[in-house]
Length: 72
Image (cartoon, rainbow, N blue to C red; front, side, top):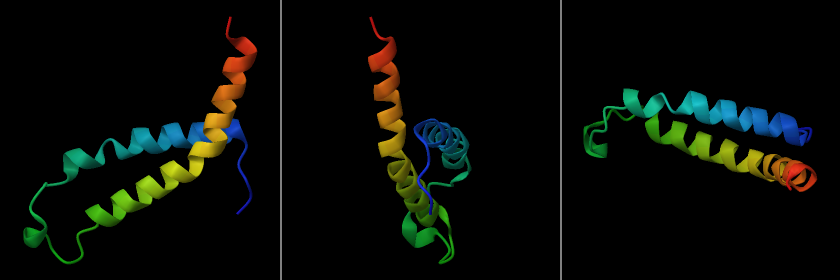
């Protein structure tokens, strides 16, 4: 996979969080033993965390760079 630019990583990270925020409201929050074997909640959360963490380095570097150039 090609490396993303800082601005692109930040944009994707913000979109990821905004989109993921809807899922907890759709999750029935039942105990694990009551969920079906194919319930995608845990997998969806793992995918979210992995993508969020993968986008962090270039997004955070971009934010640091912007602040360094524009902070008083």
